[in-house]
Length: 238
Image (cartoon, rainbow, N blue to C red):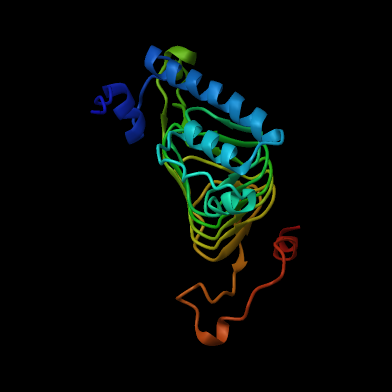
């Protein structure tokens, strides 16, 4: 089956250029997402199986990878999805198809994804509740912005592997959070976060470097395991 070419408006959206969100094409895509979200949220808030939650998640984000054959033993069947992301409901999205989660990702409840452009989260990254990722933005000039009739744009968001994003964090368009970083609860991330650093605050700023054997730039003497929680370095900003 041949995939139809993208319209010029959708190409502009994907490239982070000005586009119009309230065309029939994009309204229909957001409506599809709302329907899929309703099904997913109702299922995962209830007592659905791991297989069903993975299936519904893949439908929501447009992942066409087929599920493995179902095994008669429930525990063994569930183990087949150990590497799939675990996304607690409710979750809120615009399109779903621009959200890309790596292996072993955990997303706590009430996450919000304005996925105008791609939002990518690396393997083993953990989100607290009420995390919001906004890849969409609007012109500052109100004459150009013009409510629902005017254009908007977006910039991709990239969260690296092995990150920890605390509860109530907001991540703005175009941000990259480097591998192994921690973002303290309640932070608003307005600038890129370097790998293996703790940031916190509004706007988020660097608190300190994380000691870890995962960081190839650290010397052997620096590589003590960093076991303290984020609340300790975050206390430095109060």
